[in-house]
Image (cartoon, rainbow, N blue to C red; front, side, top):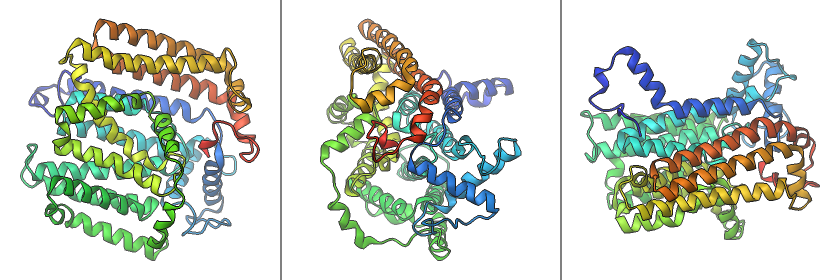
Length: 480
């Protein structure tokens, strides 16, 4: 996807101005996505119980000039992560210095900075990691897929801990995999470089532990054990985990427990999760909603992994495990409106990128390019028909129409954008031009994000802030 790979031998021959230009070009997706988040962050107030709660706690910290919450029901052990509240408070203080207001008049957007920054930070390093340990084409495609994933976009501008936690935990796993690949000489690297990656993995896992508690360690242990068992390489566990970074993880965990920043794990409650499991179709609904339109490629991905033998590669195996374990843990825990498996979607994006890379370089038959293109075009057509039905024909019950009516014109414009995108992808599909399929699908989805997020959210804002979830069963209730 990039003319020059930033990790290639050409890098050192560039002039300073060329390096800046190449840096901007290599990171153009992150830059544009960051601009999208900035535009959307200030378009709405506080939606849902969790945002209201986090905002109240942050404003309380700012008003009292302290760093520990004291509001009723917000103790250190059963309240939100103190580390996250510190970050939102720092963002509020920065906004105060910029003249944006202080508590209790602090607007919502400064408290969204930690989530937005976490998303941008992860996407930047995510692309660099994939360029180094996979291919630059795969890195670019995975970036496009993740940026056009609805759940990732929504959590990137929400006052909740989920995105930042997922960014830290996901980056910890990528660091561990990098160390493993270097240790097993699957990729070239400096002597002893793998040790630095393993240390970084443990340090970022320590941050994730302090941010959201022991589930970070529990899920990570499951991922590593299942991956190494699949590799028949459990003996590598000691070499990949026991290092200076592991000591940092232990100190962070013990300190967090001692000072009340992290709750003590209650493993006897884990079996309770089995009694809270919802019907499996609900989790399929979460997956379709959270990763549309890419989720329609899952059958093709399964066939590709099995038919090509790609599932035998260590990277593909790790990505499969890193997707399945968080998703299954969320089912085990009874489900939390689809937010817990957020960390799984970057790894599914990498698997999808592996499926689409041969299509992108047009290294496969025209028939295969047309099949993949037909799925993406069909997804956009389905979305445009759904938007048309809700906003033009006014189909749907009171809940749906209560959501659509305040943002009728943005929905209609988004319908037009989806239809134009579907036409474009359909033409590319018919012509067999695989290079443009993912780009134009992502561009279409992100333009819809922009229209709905900047224009539509403003119209919907008053209703969302005043609604009562107990009496308003609208389709946005999952945002709570």
